Length: 116
Image 1 (cartoon, rainbow, N blue to C red):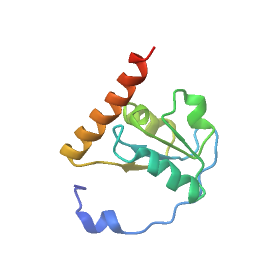
Image 2 (image 1 turned 90 degrees about the vertical axis):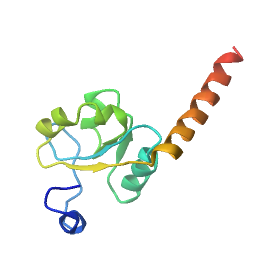
Image 3 (image 1 turned 60 degrees about the vertical axis):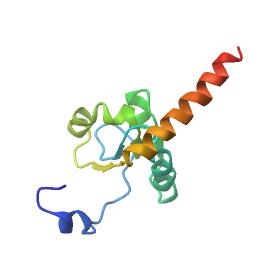
């Protein structure tokens, strides 16, 4: 929980659509896979924040207004320094449904590789 309480977290703030490019403020979705990061990416796109899901390079992040998934989570402190004024959205999921979702994904992937 935010140190100043949930009321602060729910207050609306104005945030201009971030521009692409080095050093520009972004919206980052921090979450493990299977916690809604794909849905968050789609929502950001719909709201006018062109975003990349699971970026694999800094160039991809610089080319978008937002970025989401575990690759962003792994480097959020550095991204906060590189893109001052950015906003961060944390996605979570209850443990049991998350584990079941991961297991299902891994079983599908294992089946694909087993057919080769």
